[in-house]
Length: 78
Image (cartoon, rainbow, N blue to C red; front, side):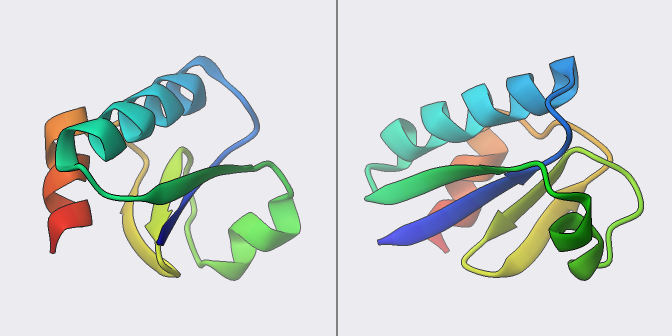
């Protein structure tokens, strides 16, 4: 099972990213848990300077933008 973390305080972009991540899980047909991370200390621990951020299995794959569900599905399939 993959772990997807959506990093951000809960702004509109963060909410859109969470929605896209959940759609991507369905598109990719993988088993994954989507977790929202709002703790600034943990977000800083990933070294990103702008939110929203997206982490898949501990690896930062995107930050500062909202990737499409299709892009996220590709990352999940890798």
